[in-house]
Amino acid sequence: MASMKNIKLSEDKRIASIEPGNTWFDAYHALESDNLAVIGGRVAAIGVGGLTLGGGISFYSSQYGWACDNVASFEVVTASGAIITASPTSHADLYWSLRGGGNNFGIVTRFNLETIPQSLMWGGSRILLEPQFPAAIDAFSNLGVNSPQDVAAAQILSFVYYQNTKSASADLQHAKPIANASIFSEYLAIPATSDTTSVRTLANLTLDFNNKNPNGLRESYWTATFKLDRDFTAFIKDVFFEEVLSIADADALIPAITLQVITIPMLRNFAKHGGNALGLSKEDGPFLLIDSSTMWADEADDERILRTHRRIIERSVEEAKKRGLFVEYIYMNYASQFQDVIPSYGAENHARLKAVAKKYDPQGVFQVLQPGYFKLDGVSSRYRE
Image (cartoon, rainbow, N blue to C red; front, side, top):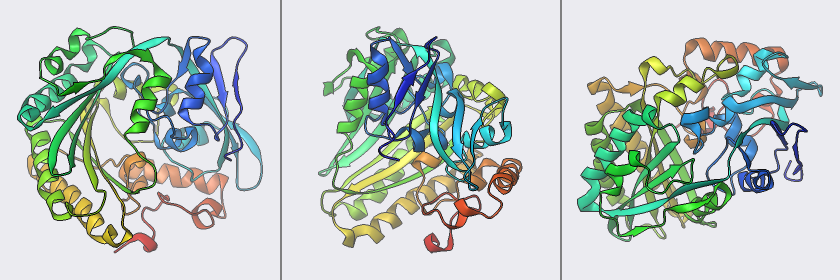
């Protein structure tokens, strides 16, 4: 699959046909000369296929939805060897399943993605220190609620513990080349120790995110979803910093907890082309999505770091349930191998996904013979404690 690198723009330039061996940087760079983009990942080196099949959050998701919501059609090789096109009008059940259902249904050999007009945009990181944390959480929560006022705006707020220092990174983006758009005024009023925001290309901005993810280290990601609430967001930040102290002596440790909002405009776009499989409703939003992640060097530290992540998630979920803020949904692209992703989409969607898989893969080839995580019935016995 890594050699499948073709990218082809349709004659009318409305569809970019992208093979799964491409990274998002490849895709964005190829479309730049036509002042076009597609809805996809925010880290340059991430592959097109996995991110899209798991959902796929974009800088433009409040405008257009997630990556999976902007696929015109998928070219899929099924377990029988048949090559079919799944779209809203052809094999619509498979098309729906591939919008968040992962690699459980076949091998996707081509993603036909809807293009959007895009030239320059604005974005970058503002680094904040501990005294600014309360103001950052206020800005994060308010922007999450007020997203409908400017759907071109996006944000990511991360808290990091590195070399015994607590810091936060407020990553802000705007789809237009507008420096310091008014919707960011609350963030921009917070004193920052550094600021990389500038007008740039989409491809260039993904390189910034790539540089925050160095190669050569061990990594673990865990996730959970909650109803957006300012005080609960502060609680999660506190839990993170409390728990990472137990692993602070691990070699080359870089723990972070990254917060994002699944906004009401995003959720409205989930309904495009018949809807996706994720099971989230705009009536229940907006949602707080957390990504608890760590990079480290020594395999000997694996067990205690994984335990720490589990505690962060368990404590957050327990408190959310007390406050009436817990949401079952687990985002595949941030999940650990120990989390039950597909069952978290809700009983109805889970049953529907299993029925579609049975139709296109009656022998369960992609459940039994394909390695990896996030199978239809949740965590395999291999990854259960």
